[in-house]
Length: 293
Image 1: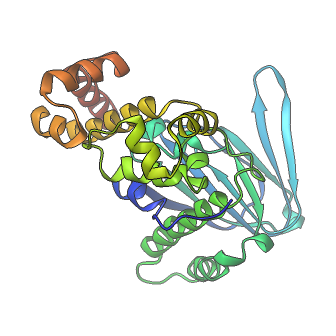
Image 2: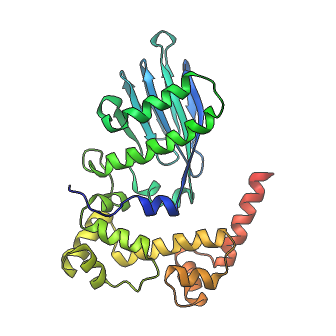
Image 3: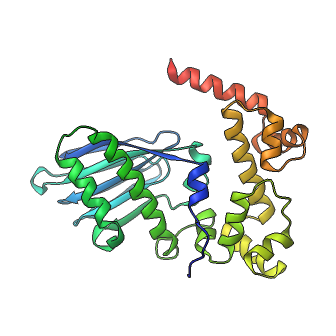
């Protein structure tokens, strides 16, 4: 599909960040397991050698994928997986975890395929970033880990750009990324993202997309799997969660995300989250305390 002049990823990444943490660079021999953890994704780059990717499935035989060339493997959501690396195959990997702001509620994390596997030969626009990443992996220098982390974050943005241009090839499911890949819907999605407090209507959103009201509503539901009103409400509540996590006053949050009053935001928040804003804040505090213990 064609592009759009709007920055389709910028606002999402500014509001909901992703932090990479490099944890391996070098040979990987034998069997390695990576367990699913809340809000945690993985990105692995097989630089050389061969290996087998294994996904254990509770009620079915394990899924096995053999990789025989340099390949990028991306898990945007928690998924337990393992690698089998015979020593004689000389497998070399660079790996990082990805911590999504908001965990499973991160707008892009839940809109991506469960796994993306791409041979590096296809990722021509990313070759310079990959070369820098491999260079950092080879030599221990001051700031090596910090720079590798940032390079993984750059690589992720470049990969998402890549997927935006190939949603069908990589089976991008209905959701935000599929919507951002649509040249007309993307304009409405970016407008909602950048101006959540606007009193958006179906008519004004359709106008921003350059579509008729009925065509916009039908296309939006088909591509994103939800109505424009549902999507806008989810985006506003996601932003409200961020404000609550920072300890901002609920009235200020309500104004910023498009609710006329604190009580209106509280009702909408409880309807979607099953908790009032104060109950949600208390639950988050307990989780942080349990993690620190």
